[in-house]
Image (cartoon, rainbow, N blue to C red):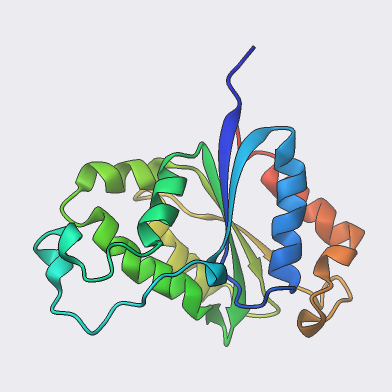
Length: 190
């Protein structure tokens, strides 16, 4: 019998019961039969934004004054996975602040550790964006999380397209939205 694969899910939404949480639950159900799952709601872990420091991480990553918060846990979960799914809401045509906090803080995990960065970039990632508008800003931001010369795999789910409301958090009530999500995710473990 083949060893069970591993998947890491991170929802970056700050909204506990919104569409991103419903997408994460749908993915947990889908992965349950296929993989061991590590699932995180970014807002429920403790990650301190960059700042109020003297750039100690540039000298040695362990010198970051916030090194002991949860960013290392999240990065290690991705590193130890066969695939990762990032669920990111659109706030003002850009990924939400939680995603940018992770993006910035993950630097200290990989500072002076090109071996870890290369391994992180090699983990296949799927980006699921809950958005009614811009796509370009997301594509640019996600390129930092995939190998060089690789385009990120992104599914843009528009609540409006599926006749739902972003504010209602009911996107996964749409059978078509669920089907699009599962079709997109189906290749994640291959």
